[in-house]
Image (tube, rainbow over all chains, first blue to last red; front, top):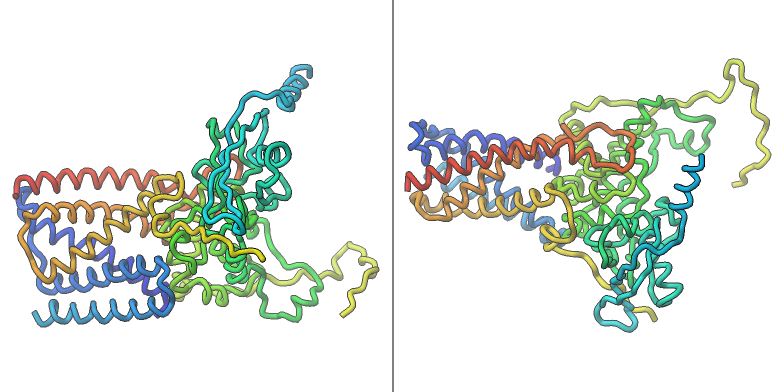
Length: 95
Length: 286
Length: 127
C-alpha cells in the first residue's frame, strides 16, 4: 500500500486513540475526580485495533530510519503487520 | 553627508578589534587514521567572516588547511561548514556576531568527509536529481522546441518562489536528524524542491514526482524537527515546503486535488502593436 | 592513490545531538522516545493486565500525555496547516513554519503540564 495512505491511517488512529484511551484511562485511574463510564466491548476492541496499528506503525517508522536496508525493512513491515494481526485476533476477538 | 562618510570608513577599516582561536577539524585520508583539531590564532577586523578567517589561516599560517569555497557571497553554496555547533555558510557568518573567542569548525556532518572541511556532496546532489527538479511537460516536442514563454501570473509565481532560492548548500541535510541516521531519506532539500516544481503552474509532472516522494524513504520520514529551516541561509524554509507537500500528496491520493493542465504558451507572434523580432543570428546545429 | 573519504553520518545519536537547534527538535526526539515507551508497554499491557501501582505505569501515562499533546500539533502541521504560505523571505529570516507553530506547541505543553499534575495527584491518591 502507498506510504501516504498508511500515514493517513496513522493520523486517524492517533485521533481515535486520543478519544478512546482518554476515556479508558479516565475510567481506570481518575476515579478520585468523579465517575467515568468505561468503554463498551466494541469500543474496547476498536481501541485495541487502532492502538496496535498506531504503535506498530510508529515502531516501523523508527526502524525505517536506522539504515537496515530495503530488504530487511520489507521483512520488518510484514512481520509487524502479521504479528499485529495475530495479536489482535488472539487478544481482541478470541479472548 | 559627513556623518555617512565616517560610518563607511568605520565599517571598512581593517583595524584589528579582536583575536580569536580557530579550532579546525583536520583529516587527510592518506595520512591520518582519525580527524584531529588544529588551532590557529586569527586577528579579526570588522566585517570579517569565518571564510575570511580560514583564508587568513591558509595564506599566513598553514597552507595545508583544506576547504571549499567559490563566490564568497552566499550564492554558490560551496562553503557550508559546521561552525560553533550549527551548520552555517562560512562566507555568511560574521566572526564578531558569533561572539565566542574560540571558533570550532568541522566539516558538515551526514556527508562523507573527503578532507579537512570538505564534504562529499555527491549523494546529496543525487537526491536532488531524484525528485526531477525541472519542468515536466506532456508535450515534450513543444518543450524541446519552444516558440514562446509559458503563462504565469505574479501570484502563481509566489506559490513557489520562496523555495526556488535554494542554493544546494546541504546545510539542511547536515542539520536533519532523520538524515543523520537514514542515508536513503531524500532529505529536506530534495523534498522542498519536489514541492517547488509540483506547484509551479507551468509543470505537468506532479504524478511522476509523487512516485519518487511517496516512498518509505520519502516525505513521510520527516517528523517536523525543524532543524532544516533553522539553518537555511536563504530563507527557503524547507520544513514549510515539506509539510505543504505532505498535505498536497494526501489530497492527491484522496482524489481531492484538482487536475490542471500546465500553463499555456504565450504566442510569440503576432502580438498586437509589437514589431516582429529579427531573425536569429546564432543558429543551433543538431 | 587517494584513500576513501571518511564516513561522517551522525547516526541515531543525531536524533538528540548534532547541533544547537530549537525546541521542535527536542519535541521530535521526545515524541519518538515516548512513542517507543508506550508501544512496548502496550504489548505488555495487553498480554498481562496488571494493577495500577507500578511506578513505571505512571511513566507510561506521562509519556502518553506528552505524546498525545505533541501529536495534536504534528497532525495539524504535518497536514500543512498553520505553517504559513510561501512568501518572499526578508532577512534576517525567521523560519515562518517554526515561529507560526511554536505558540501552538507551548499551549499544548501547558495542557500536558496540567494533565501531568492531575495524573500524579491521581496516582498518589489512588495508589
